[in-house]
Length: 202
Image (cartoon, rainbow, N blue to C red; front, side, top):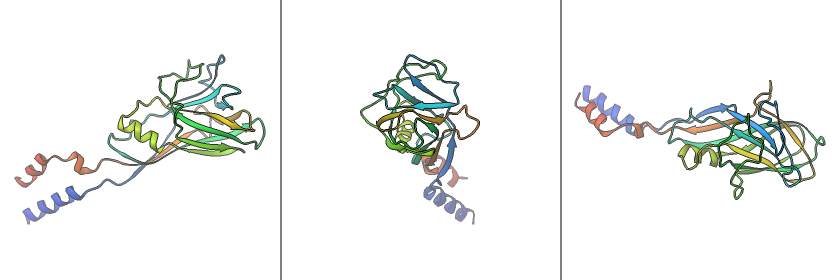
C-alpha cells in the first residue's frame, strides 16, 4: 500500500499541469503627454489626439510581479474608458506600442521613446464607453524577459476625431485595467528528480 501510494503520487506529479489563472491589474503609473506642457501624471484624465497634428500620447505601465516567471500568457487585454472627446462619436484610429525607456508620471513632459516599427493592436475610438487593446504578445515578452517592462504608449494615427479623453488611475471610477489570463509553469517544472527519488526512498 505504501509503495502504491508513492507510485500514484509520482504519476500525479509527472502528469500535473497548472490550471489557468486570471488577474485584473490597475496601472502602477499612467499619464498623458503634450510636449511642452504638463506634467499631467496626477490628472484623473488621459488624453490623446492624432499625433501628427497634436503630439498627445497616453503612457501606461503595470506591475506584473504577481505573474510567475515562465508563465504562458493566454490573453492580456488593456481596457480604457473614453468619457469625452472633441465630438461625441467622431472616429479616431489609435495604435499601441512598446515603450523603450524608463519614465516617471510625475515628471514626464516630452514624447516618450518607443518602438514605432510595430504596433500590438489598432482600434477605432468613436463614442463614449470601454475600449480594449490586445497586449497578449507584449505581456508575454515582458514575462519572458525579452524586453524590460517600461509600459506601453498609444495615440491617434488617423481619423476625423480630434482629442479623446479617457479615465486615468487617479479617477474615482472607470480606471484603466489590464485583464490577464495566464497558465503558471507546471508542477513538473518545479520538481527535481532528486525530490522524486527521495520520495521513493522514504
